[in-house]
Length: 463
Figure 1 (cartoon, rainbow, N blue to C red):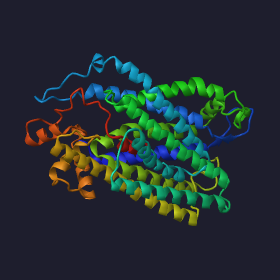
Figure 2 (figure 1 turned 90 degrees about the vertical axis):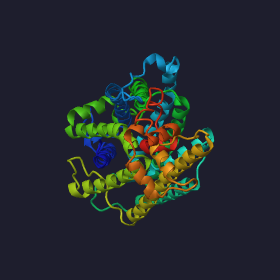
Figure 3 (figure 1 turned 45 degrees about the vertical axis):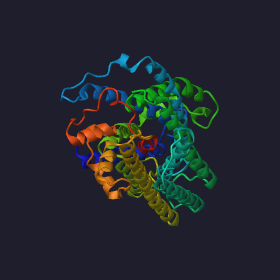
Figure 4 (figure 1 turned 180 degrees about the horizontal axis):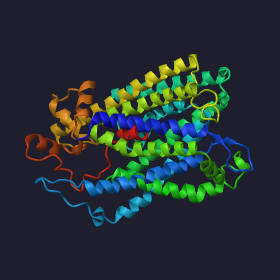
């Protein structure tokens, strides 16, 4: 039995750690190549490389799950794991097609890492919520997904919050920096460019998610397997193709190149603080993949949405605590974190509140859509056009036809959902209630490894 409170706390702690460290790495200054003076570790492509290493770590998790969690069948026994030949000859074809979303991940991530150079960590975290709108638009156009009024309201509130956060960042950029702060300052145009890159990254990521859904379909691949495969593709492209090219074309990094990988490795070798920061960054990536999937399984999309927004708040608070707690010298390389920017920060607080409300409203609308789809399936016998969580099917059975669940009912259903049956069909749900089927019986090899969740739900993990 999983302690769900501990799961939430662990997930928040790990993803917050990852959110703080990626910007923190940019603020560490040291000597790399001894022929050049100390400089900041502004190496977005090296962080990209670490990201793909973190994604490949999904494979050990996948193999562990296969080894220790064989699905149960109706008589209480355990079935054998799905054999490779049962996946079919198209398995290798699907693995080859995963290259497309992997390249989307590569482009989106490097846009985000580059944009983070110019803007504060808190602004970047909050702009991440734009993924909801981008995925909704692409899913509407390419996947035929339709939304209810609650979801549209959530999208509108999120859009409003993005405008408010963007305005606060522009206001902070145009104001005078805090006296004696020692922070690296970027012009308003540079910060606007950074915000543009972060939002553009979400546009690319939204296309990536649509590609994943198109490519994967009913392939039978576990999400960890997909993530790990994307990591392998991205790692090969970044380490063997892109970084060697960047080390030989003109740029602003050490040696006059675009990004000097040798200098990056020398800085890591010299600086133990940087080593620790990058290890924590990898830990945060692991938590996003592994614990994020557990949150989805044991708690659901509403809790995951709230957790992701709390991450943005905690990253902001920790960054300010680091800035004021450590002072102008930080860890010896200059100030770290970010300061309070007066009126601009107050406006950002308003934007954060709007963002939190908008994401919660959208997640609630998504739950309502699932409940209504489950009720329609019960009444008309037409399969739901969207994946429906088992907890939402259970909630649908408790409600009168056409009645929407309350937000509290959705939260309660997700918190008490059966972790073994995160997603299932209507027949299995009814059988479980009647007692004619044991929990986990419908987790057969054919459906236990389907892609978990709809595009709109999966996006909460990917923010």
